[in-house]
Image (tube, rainbow, N blue to C red):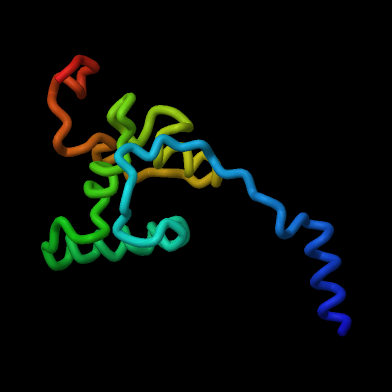
Length: 124
C-alpha cells in the first residue's frame, strides 16, 4: 500500500501524465519509417551500430538501418541536410536530448541523390 501511495505522490510531483514537449523537426520526406517511430527514438543507435558492424566486418551495405538510408529519407527539403539548424532531423533531436552527434564527421549529412547544384546551394 505504501508503494502505491509513493508512486502516486511521485507522479503528482513530477507531472507524470503531462505532455512532454518535443522538438519541432523538419522530417524531410517522412512517411513510413523502417520501424515504429517510438522504437526508432529509443533504439536507432543500436540499429546503426549493428548495421555498421555488418558493413565493416561482413561487407553488407545498404541494410534496413543504413545511415545513408536515414539521411535519404529525413534530409530537410529546405537545406537538403539532416544538419544545419535545430529544425533539421538529426541535429534537432540531438540538441533537444543534449547528445553529441558525431556521425557526420565522416558520413554525409545530405541524401545520396542530391545533385551537385543542390549541394552548392543552387537549383537542380
